Length: 304
Image (cartoon, rainbow, N blue to C red; front, top):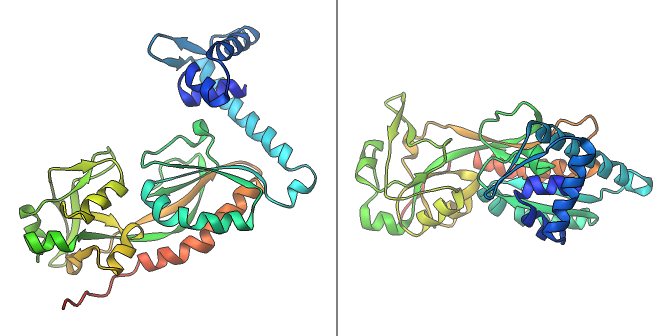
């Protein structure tokens, strides 16, 4: 069952074999033996990819639940119920992981040395059940009601550019002037090419465009720092850059005050493991105060 789950997660027998330190033929034989015992076909095999059958999808969901329950049962025996231990799989966006989460992990490890961390950073929304993620930090509106969530805080957006870009191109005094500037953005489906502003007391959205889009916030931050153009980023991501002058906030008088929520998301199990509970509590303790700062308007920068 564990091998089967790994094949689904890795997408092929050979990839699963590599991560499990097995041969591809051994993995294939185990899956064939499993299919014979169940009396169903779990995968539709082709030269290009493996696709789960309807029965395979159902068995995968059941397998993930069973393996999680087995792991939980092993960890709850004896002293394990007192001190958190075991593997904790955490998923977060690249900006949040880089600037907020990773700097805190040494402290978490000192508090809970028996918890082994498996950290994945991606700006793509992953399937928590399929990837067996214990806790994910999601930025923005939540859409999946199959999971529980704890609000960590909110963060304002800011339109920013580097001092070098502003020296070369000037600073826009009004949102309408952005049409004359290079604006940078995202290429994933849930992103928008309109930036919200409040002009003359009315909320409006202006279309922006530029020569570069990217699939993650950290790359967008890097392009902005390098003087490539103007971007709109979450303050949780760039507050240090703003405080230290590497980025300059623009058009704050027209900022509509919109925020994005950050949640710790976790499976809606009847019993939450102690390692998951202490990690979520740790995030709330250490991250929430930082997000409170990122939710406040910045004081105006006095040049010179």
